[in-house]
Image 1: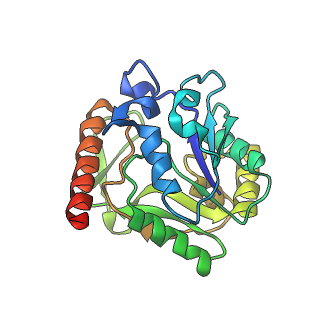
Image 2: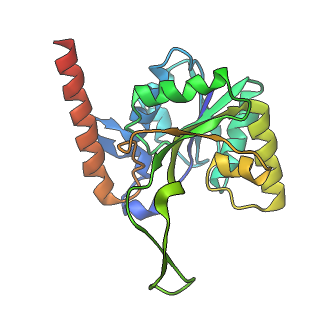
Amino acid sequence: MAIVPAAGIGSRMQADCPKQYLIVGGKTIIEHAIFSLLSHPRIQRIIVVIHPQDTQFSRLSIAEDPRISIVHGGDERADSVMAGLQQAGQAEWALVHDAARPCLHPNDLEKLLAITEHSKVGGILAAPVRDTMKRSEPGVQAIAHTVDRQALWHALTPQLFPFELLKMCLSRALQDGAVVTDEASALEHCGYHPILISGRSDNIKVTRPEDLALAEFYLTQRQSQNSLECN
């Protein structure tokens, strides 16, 4: 079972519609994200969590797929994911993928799903940090010191956890008022340590206008590679 939280408005995109409905490579960003999940045979059900005032998702052809159901989300990402979990009822595992990540590679998805064979906690796709990282003091736009990047990772999605464990940890984190920026942080709040699965750096999240051209490039490049393999 997969959840795609898509209730955000994407204010940083400076666009007339939420970022997940912008067109990239001939489809909306959210369609690319959902298709990347539906292409795997193990994912037979997807819950898309949308804003209560969203009228756009229902107009997409993918909304008619019987494997997809819709539920309204909350003010924060954690609230939306919790709404998706409650809508699901019961499942063994819950996979959560950002609606604004259109470039998920099938090999990465396969690697992540493989952890269900040996992990009781779950894990996330992540990319090792390559850039030099600087830390500033709060409210001061100046370097305080350089951070050792050797143990730093960029958290990506999908993120995959046992269904009941994720539900319990999200509920506790919300009750405690913890900062939950992704699902893994809810498990961390409860003392768990999810696995890091090294993923491709082109699995980008479209958050700024300049990300659109990059996502278009990655998708076009992948389509070209697929065409060459078929020939």
